[in-house]
Image (cartoon, rainbow, N blue to C red; front, side):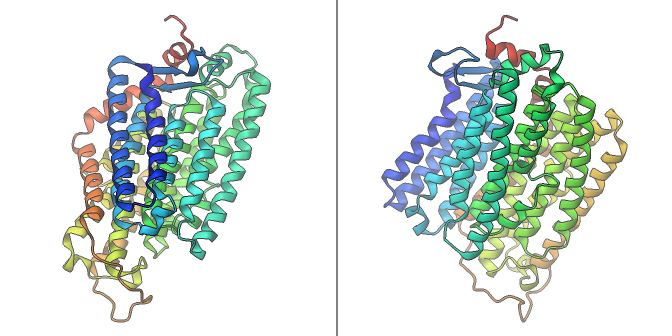
Length: 499
């Protein structure tokens, strides 16, 4: 059964290769891309069900036992993240098939799309730190090419900023790996966790931990490393931006949670304090900057930063409930944030612009698009009964239970400012009348077809169901949080140590 773990990596590879073979047939490429994403989603759900029922799955490449070989591990946290990734892959594959220009398929859009998914899934499943670095580089290479598709000047400018700061992150990651291997003699995650728990001088590893923190902080776009994200995410096609918004920064947050619960557990009070401070600054600066913007994509890009703060907040509480809240919030945000970008794309498709001052009147002519926007908007703001309310409630309860009253109050305040930003988009784009003399005249690009609104509907329904039927999702996240806070089972399963 452990062989299942290789499939979320293998399927994107197969689809990428087949997409290259039929690259001159746009219909076949689209069908291949959507079908591959659907299969990937089905496999991810099956792995989640299997792990939930039977426990952690481990795949040892070439039958080399850990810590000597390449190890892939699907525990409950990894399986949940795989499922989140699979849902986004499926919806964005449909959306991109309806919006990406035909010439993009000749530039191998779906090859890059599935290569990126391979990197994301590999990062979630790897049990080895060096291979985590490799998967990050796969993501970086794929995302850099995707962000430049079209060759527009703004895209190239954003891509340079994006790749430069992420290359710095990769260099820091590689340096931290060297430091860690020199001290511990292993990069297998379970073996390293065991050694750190048994080593009385484990605090000497704190230098490596800090370098890892900076590297993952850049990937996650937390304060003060977030400046690259709003400078680049508003430049590529919306299908690419939505994919990035849903997945890329979440891989960084996944790494922060995995590292801080598995490895660096000796100076817990220091790391908790640091995470809480960083979370607060990330939330506040992100949401305040978003409130000052008038381009829909830039507003939503800054809100990515703000919402990342909530996830880091759960890690900062460092309790099973806090970690569970971070995981739940990550899932809610992956769907809602992706959906807001899809709704923004529908606005631009009908009005020809993302700039709020130049558009208006959408509610009167397209009330159903207003509904598709208001669901993820209210979800991000934490309005009941949507999933954002449940995610914030879990984190607030975790904060009060742990005695962190001030930072919890900050999280509540940020939620109110988020609501202000969403209402601002609503008032400008949907409620007010269309300006007689738009500030920026741009031509409308077409109608909102089934392939454009259907993915938004799917994600909206998921956010509603995560709120209305929150109990089973929360129980799953709580189990994952408890496993992360006590990784003994993970360590023993990977290293094949009898219980």
